[in-house]
Length: 328
Ligand code: TRP
Image (cartoon, rainbow, N blue to C red):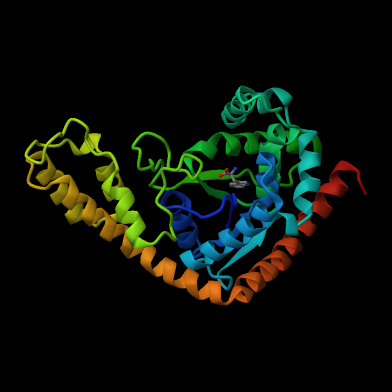
């Protein structure tokens, strides 16, 4: 049997370049050589209580973008979490072998619960149990490899701990998952300060028209010590340069680095090259997304097919789990 890869992606609306470079690009590559399973985690999304209409639309939008990026239903499984009921049932069972203390130490939980409290909102039990559902997602498929961003490594470590505790109590059954970081670990947004994210509004949308990307780049920060065109710049203090490293070819990046240091290239020109590099990636994705927009049934049937394949595996594992824990 081929080794299994599993990852989950939040349906947060339109996906951005950071999602692509940090995760989706890796998903596409892993279709070869692994049995790859990718899940749009709509139940995780409920922890931020999105508008129901919006959630529905976002799930479809995520699926359309994933397919446009090159996930092919013939080479992998793409499905929606809530279409496979085994996830939540397993999450409950696993929550009974998950330590309250461990969950309290999750930095994502601490950040999000601090945010909620500072806004005077309550902290939901769903937010607290989020990593348990994530563990269930992964281990239902006995996935060995989980491509994620750096911020998810702690959750994968927790998943390993939960698996070990389950095994100690009930005997071996699952596979201990391993996080696989993409080379592009932390893509900063156009503010050059925070991780690229839609909620920060510092993103380059994957389906954003080239003109709009150009406008955003025009006002994006560069090396702030470089005040005039004739001043030399320091590429390592420039977020535009750091983005180049992920999208522009090597020789060109090397040239930009040298030229920036001796004021041989200005920020405007450098941003122009970045815009072109982004377009080389995003252009074809946008074109395929437009085709899928005209034929939404292709997206819907991919998700349907994905749910059938996922349910088959998930039901089998869940059957084994029920048996082990005495629910049968
Ligand atoms: N928590 C992940 C994120 O925010 C999404 C996710 C849910 C996930 N289930 C998963 C990632 C399982 C990997 C494996 O990005």
